[in-house]
Length: 131
Image 1 (cartoon, one colour):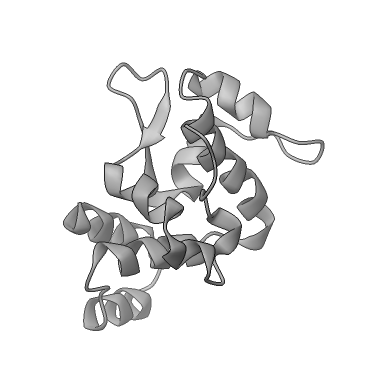
Image 2 (spheres, rainbow, N blue to C red):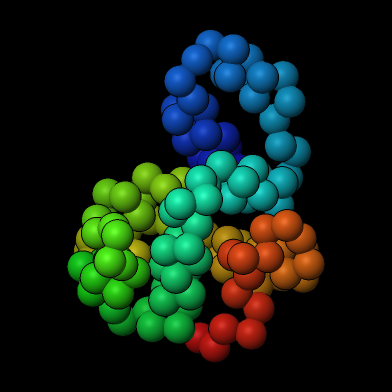
């Protein structure tokens, strides 16, 4: 999982300088990799990304289309491609392509951990979310 995340992070970078920076200082653990991915989510998308995480846990039978409708707001219509793009390698589509799911069980564990709950990334915390 760590390698997949690193490759996806590198693929999103737009300059050689950014690639060099990441390659000279890669995250050493899944935890730091996940933290880096969450830090890259811009403020304007963080609220609906948080809602997507919560729905994946609390309502796992929502189709990807239903989830997108629930997280869209007055100012933004969230598409399936936007979810996959903004959530980095934390979320993927199910094998049948109908649902969103966390790409690995460690993503859910991380988002429920005290590391997230007590950090500047606490807006993404799923501690206490049933499911």
